[in-house]
Length: 125
Image (tube, rainbow, N blue to C red; front, side, top):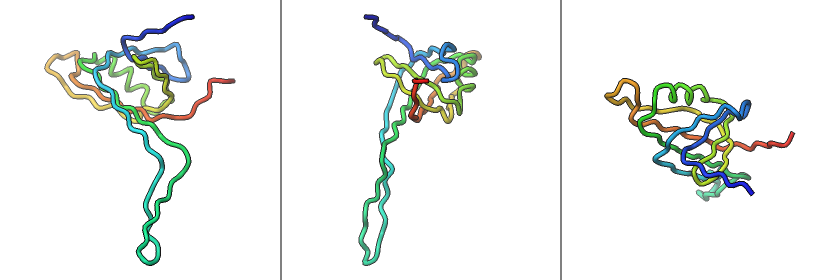
């Protein structure tokens, strides 16, 4: 049996899984939510309305990223991607945007963060 041990996050577009971007990650956060709202009805009664399923959003942060890696990451915005992290999780989703903070070094960015919103994807053809 083969064991995969990652020291970096691997991000690849679903259209070309061989085009992998490896990034050193220093922080990760996860939010899981269900579609829910509270509606007010007659007599002032509040009711909770929920929908099926849940959505997971993962926020990843990277330090001292090169501008070339940032450009590769920005090219993935809006595409379906697969992310493998150090824990071995495989998450299919979409990157809606990338936030980057400048650093004094001309070729590096101090703090880059990405939020990946999960999507249902089947690898079976």
